[in-house]
Amino acid sequence: MSFTLSLGPKANMQTIADAWASLADALESHASLVLDLSDVADADLTLVQLVETARQHAVRDSRALRLSAPANPAVAALLARAGFLTEPSTETLEFWFHGELPQ
Image (tube, rainbow, N blue to C red; front, top):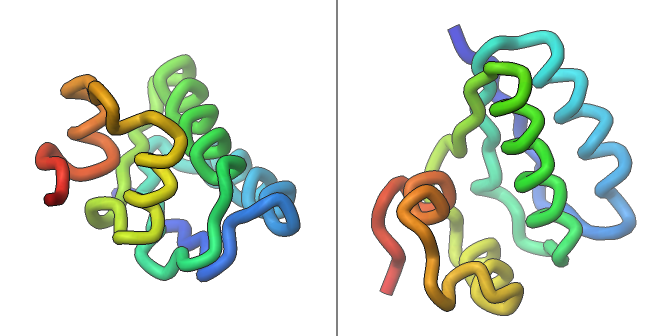
């Protein structure tokens, strides 16, 4: 059974340390983690760094990590600004958008 962790509406430099603590604890405690970013409205590049680092940790530790839903418009815009959507890999599209890049 998977555990769902919501980061809430804010995921930026001010909140990212707490978000990492929660995410790292959840990854350690659960074999399968669902990350809910649906409420994120205020985010900066630290969110992308957090999630990408968590993905690496999950793979390293044979854990499952996925998003509860495709990235919302605020997160998608952040990914675009960060260059993740210029030539996204299949893996990137699958993780962040459940397979399909939004138009």
